[in-house]
Amino acid sequence: GISGNGQKEFLEVLAGQRARDQGEVMVRGTAYAATRAEARALNVRLIPEEPLKNACAPKMTVAENISFRTFDIDSNGKPVSWISAGTIKSFSARLVEQFKVKTASLSSPIASLSGGNVQRAVLARELTGEVDLLIV
Image 1 (cartoon, rainbow, N blue to C red):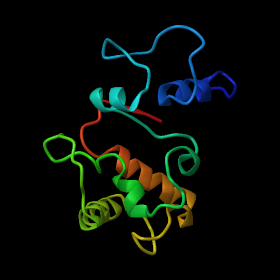
Image 2: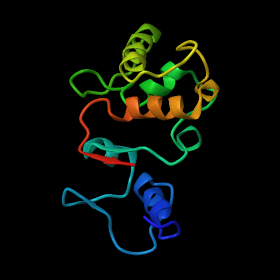
Image 3: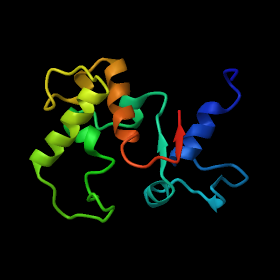
Image 4: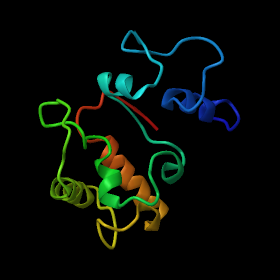
């Protein structure tokens, strides 16, 4: 759309980064306030305009950033209290290969990647698992 028509602000509301001024956001007939629990329950994912700034922990590793979405959920969708570094590494290695993320190492800080590779890493993370609504 045309710049200045509120797309950025709308995305910020959908991401839970801005309070809405009026109205209500509905996802699949359910009121949506963009909490982590609601996003998880409704399978909502977001790729922000500036992924390094708004979707990553810049000093954390590529592997850790890619694993954020599912690090605390087992294969049956149940919460887990402990996950091994090896599990994070093997999970993220598969996604790095699948999405062709160019990185020196899975242990590199995500901030060391080019902008395009940060986007690929975030896209890999956000498309992991069931996704009903992807906001870009």
